[in-house]
Image 1 (cartoon, rainbow, N blue to C red):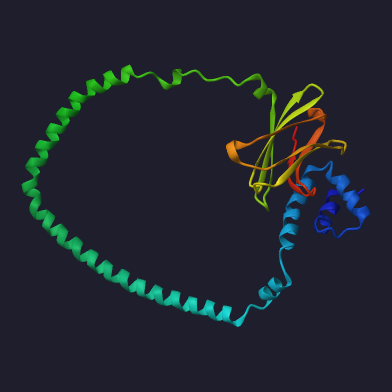
Image 2 (image 1 turned 90 degrees about the horizontal axis):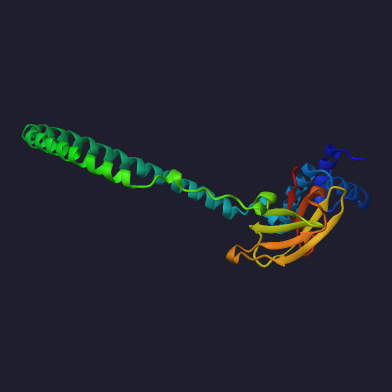
Length: 261
């Protein structure tokens, strides 16, 4: 029986399909019962999908970029340095103008302070009187408005209380999914919403039990109009569910959603 540490050491090769069938089967059996290792496999699957898009030509360009690319980078660096020196000179000139303008404004303001003192005092007295007259009116208006704290707080429905919400994500691909589960007669009712999965993708929901059984719970084409939600059911009781898996039409995992007790 492989340990979690051994499983994680072989996780990259498993995601790339480089292991022999027996070892791959042993890892799959472990992932069915270990949420931590299952979450780590989702990260590797995103990397494997990305590596499949890289061509041999891309690798050659990274290891030895063309000469014209290096020349262009050097020219851009030289241009930025010249532009920085020009901006520094402009900033220095602007600083000189600001200092000169400040000195002139200070002298001009001092000469007018005496003549402006009397009108300012009169305006201050008038403002104080208007404020005193306005205070009673403000008290009347405030007494007539209802308090926001008296508004009734809506109570959640019994169905909302009974349901549990579980979320999971694929950080590499930017996919997220939320499953809301409601215990029902003879199984569990499910409501699924997704985010980030490309519209038009055929998605399938698989419910995995704690003993490794996999129960397909239907499929649908992803769309985002009117906050679309996929509804389904599973024969597994709520207490027997270990996780939910959102997979594409080829069976590749898009998002794994663990069920935490």
